[in-house]
Amino acid sequence: MSNRFYLTTLSVHHRAIRQLGLAILIALLTALAGCASTALTPAQIAAANSSRAYAQKIEVSGRLSAQYESMSGPQSIHINFTWSQTPEQTLISLGSPTGQTVATILINDQGALLTQTDKPPRSANDPNQLFLEMLGWPLPIAGLRDWLQGFIKPDHQLAATPSDTNRSFNAEGWDLRYPTWEIGQHSARPKRIDLSRQTEQAGLVSLRVVIDEWSTQP
Image 1 (cartoon, one colour):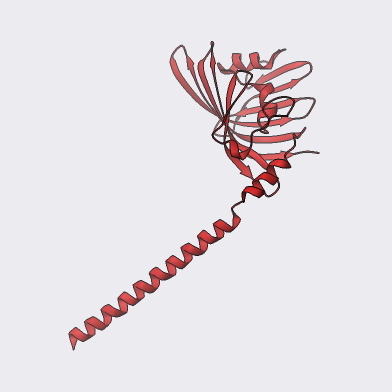
Image 2 (cartoon, one colour; image 1 turned 90 degrees about the vertical axis):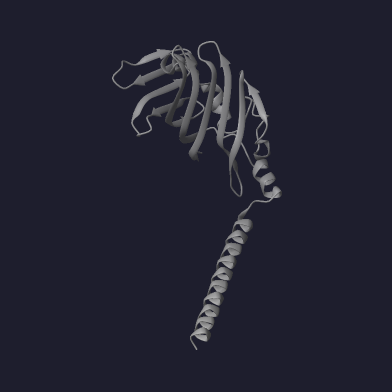
């Protein structure tokens, strides 16, 4: 009697386990099917690419990582940033990982104005030189006005696409790669940009720009 009870109980447990496993399998397949249904087709990607146009006014925020050389050896730094550009000017704010703004730079036809915490403002005709003096490594401001949107040249005739994740572009002496994209139904925008360049001041400089938020203005 006890053996039959044990076998019956064991059989019930096995059926319960099989049913649970089947339920889990169905849930996984359903989830995978849902993911597959939201994946964009090549035609949708092509449509998103074809609708891309250079935006004259953008607001971007994200993270910037830099690796470079100094007199004391290899260095690395991580910065939060916001970037606002119009045809007339570019305004960049740099912040610490804790969210504190440490510097802002305004660039327009009159030149560049740098404001830092607890330091007097500084101005220069060349914003790239101003950034180099402040950071110790170059940041290609003029190029990033185009590169943040995936356009390689100032005439906007050459643009990276989501199909170019393994492709390297060269512009203004920098090697550019676009390994990650944010693709919507009607738009495709860079999510991550990798830049590298050999420099006299800071050796091999490698930059990684990750865009967290993006907005355009009319």
